[in-house]
Image (cartoon, rainbow, N blue to C red; front, side):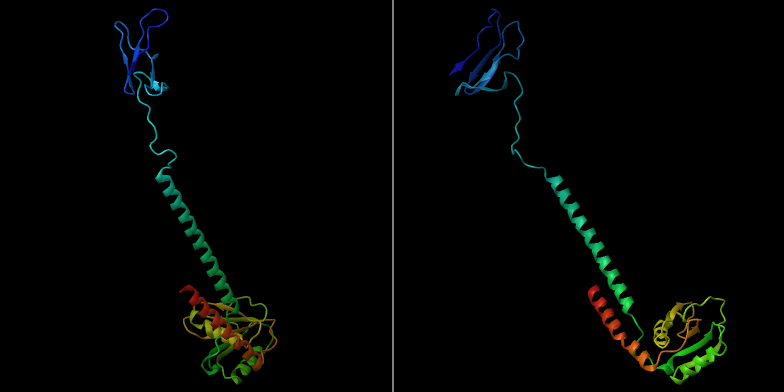
Length: 234
């Protein structure tokens, strides 16, 4: 079945749309160029078809509503990167908290023999004979007192005093500090494990042997903290 559009009402010849088998085309009229007025009509339903005769076919999305793959992959990669950064920051904060807790509970080791600990006792106060008295008490407890004198350094010492030590004498300094309650530690560049007990203006007396033993027993908590930190980092 075929159909066609007739001449225009003005009597002028117009373009003719011929529809055959569901397809349509514009039959050219002699002396005139094909115009856009002809409408494509389906021969099956009689309904107008999209576009006009001679126009380009309408392209339709084969998969309507389908999202592009690349932006979705990019969003997934960004989400994974954000989670990785967050986890790294969280792990670093946990490690810092664990180290701070260990540092707060760290005390002297319990397995040092006083006879193997070399100390020098210096007086940084105006009290005459203070270094000699403390040296005698430490010697009675078994410490190897190698020197007794006024403080040779031009350094202000406040409070009870300080234990000076090098990197190799950190554990020894903690052990000696258990016998001098309230003392602070000061690390210098010496290359041996010898420590200096520097008495300050706030010093009154050494801890009793029982008090020192109680302080040293707290080293078990520090050892447990250190082992827990090693297990947590593995």
